[in-house]
Image (cartoon, rainbow, N blue to C red):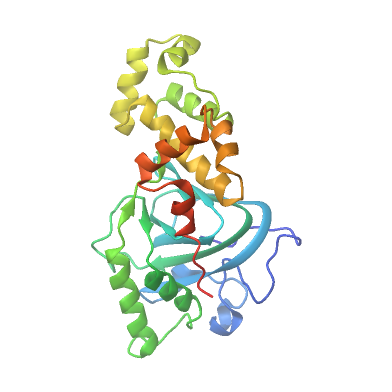
Length: 289
């Protein structure tokens, strides 16, 4: 992920670099433009804290695999055939050559790990959200403080090996919103993202678009593997995680998403992710320092 363009007010302090390594860790010729894809090591990482009103990296690709880890705040990515949210204590795994864009806003702490292709053969070859253990989290933060050209036979090299072993054990979580290729369904997706409180059924959407409901249902199932209700629910979970992490109340989020009550929203969330919203986010807000 290249360094995003930022206004001076959005730029992090020198002690908390964002999307770059400390100058002491760079090769002399990389002191200005550091590119982790040029580092001849199994892993390269950088990251830190930033406060921004909104920063977006346009669609791009990498020749290395990438893990985007969020320790505070929520990062939104469009990668492959889906929209991904990266809540605290989760990481988005993006295989090499997969086009993706990244959006961040507010007070966030993000770290990016680049991995040589084939270094972790057990990881999926498609985008997925990984649950990051405290050990894996601390190892990644440590890697950002290692020299870019770390000694592969020294302590840093051994840490890099442990980092890759732990990454291979990280379980996947279902935190994406599949974007269909069908233009009509993409229009519905865009409308629901713009107004998530719209509770229109698939029949109502079909009427608005002058198409048979069965046609939309069949295409959606074929392209996402989901029913319309499950598809919309997935979007609501992602939006809820964003808003709850920014401090919104469960009651306010439930109403904004069109639920009749907070309890109805909490029931949906618990069935989908196995935990109520407050507990789910609290477990991902453990800081590394």
